[in-house]
Length: 356
Image (cartoon, rainbow, N blue to C red; front, side):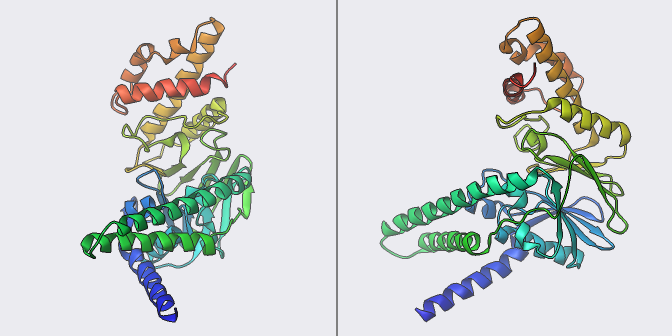
């Protein structure tokens, strides 16, 4: 029994050390800004449906500011250690959550010496969402372990195939133990209602509340000196094959007037946006993408209001033909293909119930 525990301990230490080095992907945005994500395999092991979960790290003269902390303590440790190695700095001054869902807050507890900043609504989101996430993820991992063991039972001889399965089982067990033993809810230390400015040393960071949509606490984070805007999972931008097309996402309360008001004010006062970084996007976007999204929201809102005033049906607005002239103005930004038309119809369906 002691020998078995020793082998497990050696594996976990080896796994932790090696994943820091090879299981993260870093994309340099500016000299002081990077996006960093665990490898696709790390995310798939946790049953995460998206190919990528980006955290954003900003170097300041006071230390590192990290935006979003991944979906588990293990993946947060990967990101933390890789950021420390990349910037040669182990001080994290602020941790910012763009909202309270688990892909953005699941590693908050790893940064117990840092202030966590988020919208005031995120506390309830973190509690409600992460309680569900934790139970569902542990259940998923246990089912995967059970399935892989059943596959092993059908194999008569050990070979490269069985070695691979055993490796996956060990990894599943690692994440199961990590979530059970290391995960704990960590709430924000600093919250705000509408706007907040942080000034860590030589950087200026502006936080703006976007209103309810993807979640109840969505904010945008603007790093002034690096001309970089971080949008979290707002509009689920970058998460689909047609990455530029926004999705109003799940059937939650949608505050489209608030989105338009906040984005319009922001765009009117911020011409310098070179990079737009999203949680599930594979590439940086530009200011033009945000301009398109804002104008698209206006067009959708106005079309729905007009249809309801005239007594028309939702299907008349879902018809993509009236929007073709609008999309032609932004043909350099978004492809208005069949996938975009399907997303448009879904957006109309989700927003229809919230506009009088």
